[in-house]
Amino acid sequence: MPTLHVCPLSRLHATVAETRASHVVSLMGAGAEVPRLTGVAADRHLFIGVSDIVAPLEGHVLAGAEHMEQLLAFVRAWGRESPLVLHCWAGISRSTAGAYIAACALAPERDEASIALSLRAAAPSATPNGRFIALADDILGRRGRMVDAIRSIGRGADAMEGTPFMLQLNGN
Picture 1 (cartoon, rainbow, N blue to C red):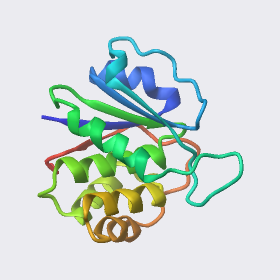
Picture 2 (cartoon, helix red, strand yellow; picture 1 turned 180 degrees about the vertical axis):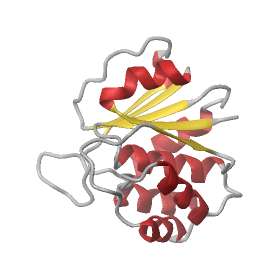
Picture 3 (cartoon, rainbow, N blue to C red; picture 1 turned 135 degrees about the horizontal axis):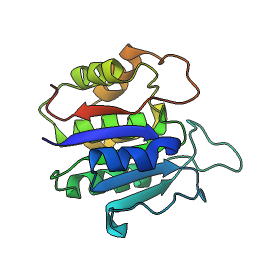
Picture 4 (cartoon, one colour; picture 1 turned 180 degrees about the horizontal axis):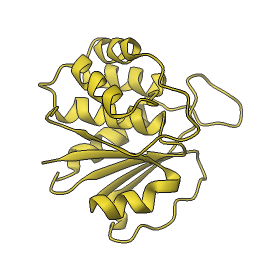
């Protein structure tokens, strides 16, 4: 069964090892270094260099449609034979948005709100980046339903770092 796993950078190696993930998405600031992962081929590790912001800010990279297109192409190419791990610095905003976007793209039959509720149940601290969600909502033709669903679960619990969690594509 295909699963998405989310973690902070500090737990990346352990999460990849524990889940035996074949694919990894790093959503980190431009120029950040992510150590080479044992067991994950270079072509199965996507690095998207964007800041965790929702509006332009000097010295930072604002996520654009091209970044979400990269993410969507990568997750759609993932064979789902083994888990996919998404991470960012803290495992709270960019990576939870990435997991939500991946789940919406890969399970189009699932309601956006049910995916958002699964996300909240799995990760009390999840606060998905609103810009990521809005861009992906537009690309996926979800007509604002992804944005509304994430808005409905509200801001996550305060945390310095998220706890690693799993999100299943089938909703169970």
